[in-house]
Image 1 (cartoon, rainbow, N blue to C red):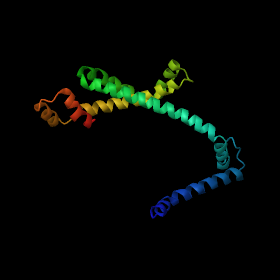
Image 2: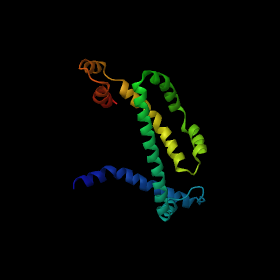
Image 3: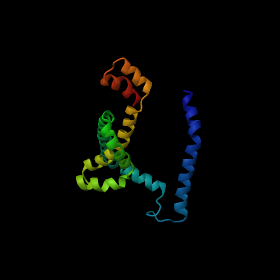
Image 4: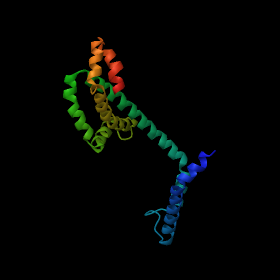
Length: 176
């Protein structure tokens, strides 16, 4: 019971500042007769939010599906590619510079291409954009986690005649 007053006491300054800013904004728009399409008052924004709430929830759920789908695709492909890249050094040396370079390309460069391929209205185009955003950091960081391991721990497992799978399971995956 004591936690509630502490939480309110902790957040009270932020709440008061928010209320004051909203009131000043509302008064500013009213006093200077600023047209609503230039700067709508908070009361009008709230009214539009409440009247469009069911539609916003529907659109929000659609966007959430796109984001989660793209995240799952990007993670799955990134981790899979990381395992392959970490396992074979020739692939690692060949692909990692391209992955790092592609990771630095702004998404604005990828988005029109993917929208062209899949169509602007297709949910898959947005999932592909999210997958591209997620893929490269997931791949690069997983490869680093799988390959940058403690040399003495690797040597110890090798002296115990551990198989590649055991080294992966007991050393590389926990490190990644």
